[in-house]
Image (cartoon, rainbow, N blue to C red; front, side):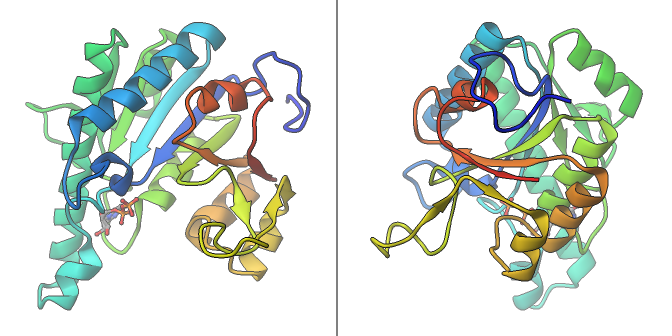
Length: 245
Ligand code: UDP
């Protein structure tokens, strides 16, 4: 296992799951999918793949389109609403596949809810094979079960794929003691223990996702999605991030 703190300029994590929230795909808009933003992420991923040789899989949330909790609050049966949330993640996965293929990155979408005419079903061994062939695999429909989130789906897939790290792309370059956009004294952490995140309720990811990463000993790397080249830098052990391990 590579060290997660060394700054070598060499690939630190050979296989990585990158989790993006659905909201990241909205770009400057208030709802839905902003294709220029998807294309920016796709370019960033294409550069990182070309220059580092990393094996990459993606999980994208659905909050830019539909959240089960919001549907339930609006009078819908919760499991039914969660199914709609999971379908939203499939839409996002297809949009990102389109963006990645426009920049020349071969991509497969695998859905936890089978929909054979749209994408592949989730098959663990097949997903691993795709990554070995340097295809990006996008895991859609979360865990396939209601009452879960895509953070937990991402943690589950990272464990199943034996990833060396789960990367969480956010608005800022790591985990801070307070919101750095509101509090000038907010302090960024270079490193946190899983237990710190859970006990202090730092809300990096759902507690169930963090505990699964703790149990499987997979580091969570929180970094900025908005700084050009940051994905590649963090893969190479450079740049700024918070490592939870
Ligand atoms: N969802 C679900 N099971 C899963 C993953 C997701 O039911 O395993 C539903 C849930 O309704 C959730 C929605 O899909 O609100 C969108 O996912 P999430 O809220 O995690 O998206 P994000 O906040 O990352 O955009």
